[in-house]
Length: 365
Ligand code: SF4
Image (cartoon, rainbow, N blue to C red; front, side, top):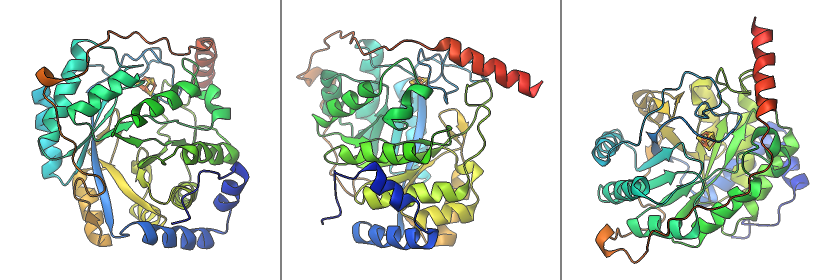
């Protein structure tokens, strides 16, 4: 299929994004039908296995320790707690569990060993297991793969050009390096970004351009609409217009035809009709569960009712790639290297964030 390209330019992608909407929808839907069953949607459940207290400064994130939000942090969950939530998710119709930890990067040690045990446990429930733990080294990615990890999520968030306006504690290249480390294993890649952070349309096209450069393309591409949380530097951003979301999904579908495009954060701000348009435009995955890490998400029963009304079916696990084998910890061929990776750490701009928060407070007062 010749549509899978790695040479899309930003200008070409922008041209696609800006087509008359009906034209864009028709093209995206046609592409969707070529590569996927348009009546099937994959359902993932996100579990926050370690919440809050993160040292990073991602401007959209209420889990960053430096922002004053209402997020209550917790320590790493136990394997049994995660197993119980995964079983509930399976009963609710999810085929995948994604475990998120608010870490800058994975550190070798007992906590990582515990996460590896969670991976083995969920894989044995015959569910696809995904992790989003921050940056990983090649050895850590291999240990996750050996434990039976199916997917690793690491979003690029936005375009390389706009990235520094949102995050200053690590560089765009660090993100790309982590994705490349995951690619050295048989773990599939989940990577996408967020719209509504004040970026330009060129930035949206630039983000998709970067995703198309990966070879192969990421198997999953989450498209998030910013949920502006009070206390974060982006708290004043207005909600994303539904037609912009539909355009973004449709454009992602056209330039990343074989990927699963996932409607992620921001679904509570969308009507059922808006979400239906996104499915028509090529979205074929959602995050389920009443919370997405710390931000609200529709109730699973509402989602299932919407699926019923739209005649959508849920995708079975391991539909596209076979289940990975889990190697038990005692049989592992990989050592913990006790790695303390020196990731790029560009100049912090905490002052800038503090200033933005102050400005927002003055406006509200
Ligand atoms: S997005 Fe992740 S890395 Fe960034 S502040 Fe939030 S938890 Fe930390």
